[in-house]
Amino acid sequence: MDERIAVFRRLHESGCFVMPNPWHAGAARMLEAKGFPALATTSSGFAWTTGRPDNHVTLDDALAHFRAMAAAVSVPVNADFENAFAVDPEGVHRNFLAALETGVAGISIEDSTGDPADPLYDFGLAVERVRAAREAVDAGGTGVVLTARTEGFVAGRPDIDETLRRLQAFSDAGADCLYAPGIRDEAHIRAVVEAVAPKPVNLLVNAPFITRERAAELGVRRISTGGALAKTAWKAVLAAVDRIAEGRFNDLVDLPDVDSLFS
Image (tube, rainbow, N blue to C red; front, side, top):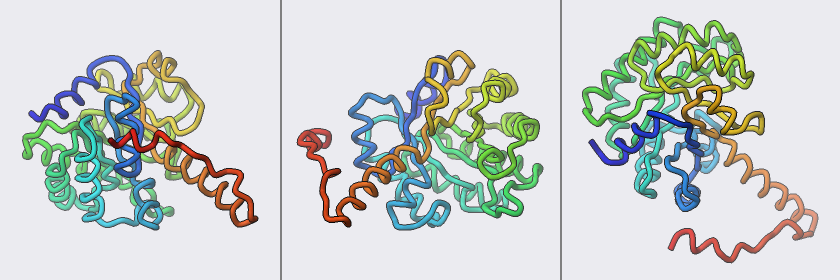
């Protein structure tokens, strides 16, 4: 087993670690330098660097991004593989096999369709998609950590009972880690942890609603930040640009130590 995969698997065995989401290789290098033990890609953050909205990059774009991110750092990288760029389980399996060749230590699959009118895949199909991803990971023989996500709370279907039903089924279908982005209520977080125990749970913290210490008390094993870091960067740039458009340069700053992050 690749050492970074082995490290990533050990991180999921106990405690609670933070896995922030850089949106390009430079941000990844910076976060590694700050001491984070693992990193994760962000589909939205990456899409914005290409001038496109989230969920509008191609499979080839995503695979190239995974390779670049994994090559940029020495820590494990978890890949946000969106909906695996396929609907049918056969396509999921095929695309996962390609993604597993990029050097990532973890990879996720979600049940979001991208259709606001019908935002989640049918329950049975969603489970079969996770099973297909599991079979691809097993066929690859790499030991990559498979995370299964249910997107109801970020896709307009915030139903905790359905979220628990799907996560339990995804766990049974072979997911190593479970994830319901968008949940913030402590009762919901605890319910998710208990529903899939002893498997680890990822919590999205993209706003200051909880601390790592409290998340750990609730049983969360892994924390990610999604597109929040990219949004933070874009917010600062947009504020500076607005000032520049007014003929003022107050928000421009000098950071003379940036080069040291990449030397």
